[in-house]
Image 1 (cartoon, rainbow, N blue to C red):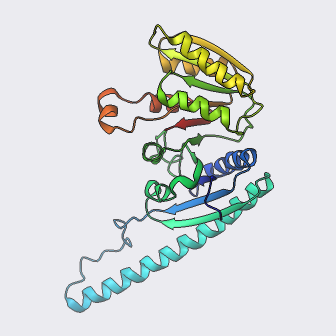
Image 2: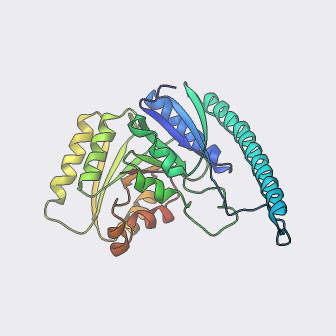
Length: 287
């Protein structure tokens, strides 16, 4: 596959993968971009065969044990690859049925964030589920890979949750900073949201130039042909965004992502995580 400007859909073997496939196919179709599904099989060396090997004493016994464990590991790896192949082929057909043109699949062993980072600048958009394989059996509201992946990348990342619903109304949580200003320019230049009404919301701490910044964002989008509504609502960011999403019937949220500084997050926490926890709609995170 041509590696330039593709939509990269990161999937694991959970029912959330279908939602990722649907949104990725929608995005790839609107952007006229190739789509690739990536399934990364994690290495878990800490997982043994489950047997009790405490009685294996002596050189010969150890050699036999190592051969047995190696054989068991090879068997598990082959089984995982085959299951992954069938899984990816099903998603490819699902995406094609949804209208995606060029669709490819890739399976790798390793860590998800490292594998995605290796893709380089050829990725135009990353799509992944906000929940993963363990979501049904744990209390985690946010998949363990989401924050790590978003922090590691500078490409936009679309995190999705439940059943696919074609976005009819999009909101940009605008704060006047470099990241969200770039996001406004990105939306204005991209075909992804073309023809979809945009709601611009500026919240947070009150500032003297807020009105001027919001007007710049509104004019930038209108100049690109978008229908735009804008509002200022100073106060608690998470609460205001959550309330506005409901009141304005927003289908997709666009906002700045995590700081790329772990120290800053340690000191000040992360509004990104708070909003992802409370939001039930797809969220496009800008790095």
